[in-house]
Amino acid sequence: MTDTSLNLVRKIERHRAQEARRNGIRLRVPSGPAVERRDLLRSRGMSDTAIAAACELHQTTVSGIHKRPSLAASTEAAIFSVPVPHEFNPGDAVRVDKTGTTRRLRAMVAAGYSQAFIAERVETDPDVIVRLTREGPHKDKPNRYVTGAMFKAVRAVYDELAFKDPAAFGIAQHEITRSINRSTHLDWAPPHCWDDDTIDDPEAIAEWTGACGSDTGARIHRRDGIPMCQPCHEALLAYRREENERRAARRGAA
Ligand SMILES: [Zn+2]
Image (cartoon, rainbow, N blue to C red; front, side):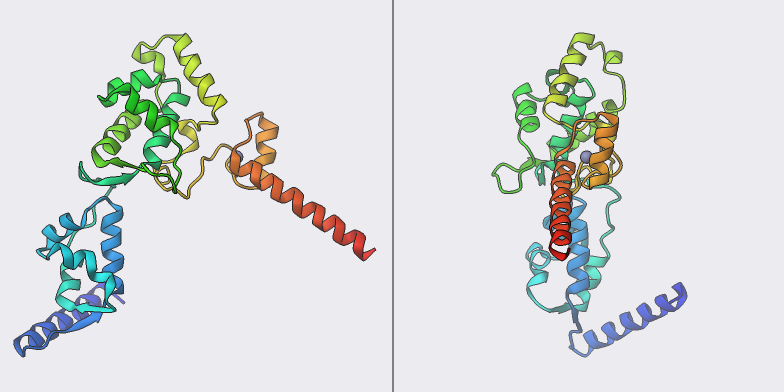
């Protein structure tokens, strides 16, 4: 559909909605598209309260639209009128999955920054950074969230430091080496293993080889002397299992 004809359809729909309102009829539409749009706004860090405020709906309306198969056309129009934020920008008090925060902290240590130095830049207590770095992004464990304020602070520091030489910030070489050794020992992925689009996605894995999570990835780890990552280790085990089954099947057939 061209832009012009799409606009025309919208115009007609708006006109129909106005007519219906005048006649005391409330037009209803399937709630699916509005729910999807709301969830997209949520994923960019908007709370239901913020969405509601931006389109003059009640917060409970925004929070509850998925509970019914249909909703008023005017509610749908209101939700679609809220601009989608360009990047994930949570409010300071919003709870944010801490996966990306932990990955950024680990990656900074792997790049040679000490946790004490990172804490100073984030302007928080070193203990907080130590705790957030240590705890893995376990979905089923409590305390899996950080505040939006912490998320944004760590992201800003990561964006500034991750791809620079720690020595440029006055960190001593022996400290840099210690941080790198520690992260190697703990399999913490450095910044080049992540990209900005996936680092916050709990389903994404660190990309050490360009093919991580497959037996090809496992072979590249071996070839290049990169310590094997967990997804590649598992892929290799699965590959070997399948090989054994294939061999057993061949023996059975012979
Ligand atoms: Zn791998």
